[in-house]
Length: 345
Image 1 (tube, rainbow, N blue to C red):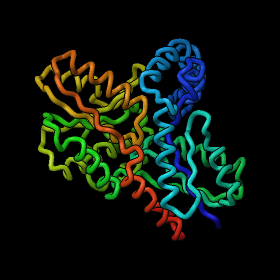
Image 2: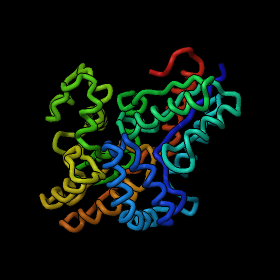
Image 3: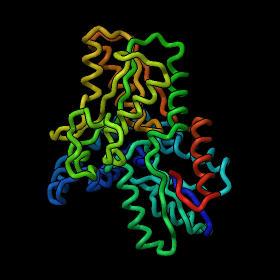
Image 4: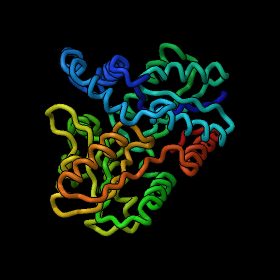
């Protein structure tokens, strides 16, 4: 069989025009693994309310961070793809879960190059129903419908792979080595608490009490987003030699009124400023590419919140983006897989 790889990231609107943003948001929010409500309720919420109010606001936010070359997430993903492809001997494609760079087109392009065995690489370190799972489910559906002779596998969540932790640690270290900061906040994208329960393969072992995430050997950790975020923080903090109390974990980007993973990033930033923290740094390890959530929500809105409550210096640490050492790690994983008969583990 001829092997190939498809890197998959979240996606982006085609432009900052509200019409393009509305189209993108519609596809994204109507995904039943993003807003996991019954179809009628999801349709009412998304098409009846959100898409009539949010596109203009989101379009304005995208305009703040848009580059001359286009969407930062797309541009950075393309740069990463090129570097990885240059380091591997098999075809490496790029697709987005939402938007015009579809997974279907990505698989078709690989098939046109003679590839009949594809490893999907979701560009998410931690597993979540609304990120990794929705990519893999769609890939399986496309394989069954359009690519019946193609074998598809995937790389599992890599939050605990030493190579990833080493690169993430190095990237943070380089950003803070000359920085006089008082607190380092690890901010991860939020998900509703019910998503954690739905991903619990033990059917109830997850207590959502912040304790079971740290128990060793728990079966549900393979698909527990909160555990994987907490462990990312723990592993990086250990390598950086951070002292207790000088770092913490939070979750951003909640939507609606149901409880999401806590503590919330915006409230954490506000609390720290009110508690007298004057200098803080923030890193976003749920994202490998800078995007709206990092460049606007954190770097702009987060800094504004911090300054409003008395904070002085607010440093946003870049995502891994297209770092050479990150491209080296991805290409090494790919090369191991391409030369073996078993998936990367």
